Amino acid sequence: MLIRNVQLFDGTGSGRQPRNIRITGNRIDAVAAGDIPVPPGATLIDGAGQTLMPGLTDAHWHMAAVRGVPWMGSDDATHIAMIFKDTEFQLMRGFTTVRDTAGAVFGIKNAIDRGIMPGPRCYPSGAAISQTSGHGDPEPVGELPTALGGQPSPRQQKGMTAVANGVPEVLAATREQLKRGASQIKIMAGGGVTSDHDPIDTVQYTLEEMRAIVQAATDWDTYACAHAYTPAGVRRCLDAGVISIEHGHAIDDPTAALIAEKGAWLSIQPFENGDNILTDEQQAKAAESLGGAGWQAGVRLAKKHGVKVAFGTDLFSRTRTSRTENAMLPRFGAIYSNAEVLRIATSGNCELFARSGRRNPYRQAPLGVIREGAWADMLLVRGNPLDDLRLLEDYERNLLLIVKDGVIHKNLMPA
Image (cartoon, rainbow, N blue to C red; front, side):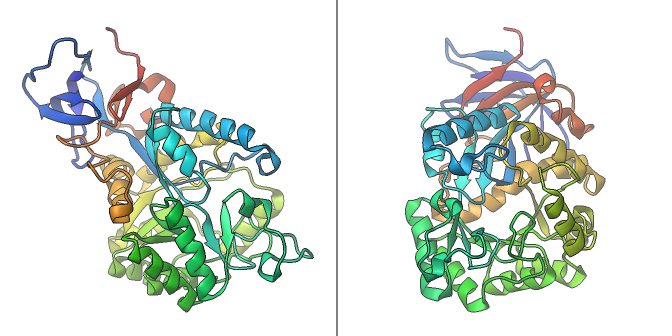
């Protein structure tokens, strides 16, 4: 395949350059300002001077969490069908890679990678590791808890979470996710909004337990990411060796400085009211516990201290809310330049994903960039997103070409 006459944003720079790009198989094998020879029969696409950029990525996604339908009680076939509908929709919005941060999506990932169903590349975490009474323990009060011999909750049975207490149990739970194919491990290290029994201010897991999880991940040449909002929770994560803080909306200045000192990432979501479907009680819990702390304050602190920020959305995989994924990215433009935002959502996220080392399922080639030898994941965008990030919101009109793994999934360019 030859894509010619494009203005290239390669995922790392700050501007566009006129280029031609050749794809052979599923990789980019030539990028040049001049003519590139192509074999007979190759697909030729004239980019008409539009912007070619790497596919978008989401560092905090939940493929298996199909919200708004009774998926916890649905049969497996129905649940899987709903997931595949959403993964195809996500790809058609321009997202070619996601990091899944809780859910039994190993089979979904394998089906996508084998070309059975369309969808983004996936870095799976498997079940999030949670203590009893933690963000991953939704069992109703009054029922015999799993830790005392009770039946696992539907969420545990579906592989969203694994409740484990003490070093032996957290080691077993972590190793089980790695055995199943996790590329990184997710820890529930603090309270959350959508869980009923853990106030947001709580710090979850002792330092000893968390260090055990991190050690088990490190022994498999990968890393741990952790759900935490507050300075106390984030600091414990950093002390334990966690390298990716998920959320962190309530961090303060010293904590942001510590994240930078440790070389960790802040994977923060630019939430606005209405992005996720929350009950009135959950909205009130967030407002009371976070004290009005919003994403902008956390990101400004991160920028001040040079913290590496990842773009993720934490949206539940449902058509109505999933459309918000594209709308959330331009919000970073209130703090970063457009070029910085695009780098974060492409090569920046993929730098974090690559910390999975030999557990990286796509380690054979670079992701998030357009250069020779990289995976052929790219978008042709009408106009210039370096001038206007909101072009990516209207994906139906402005995404003229979507290529993932060298396969064309959408092409609006004339033959």
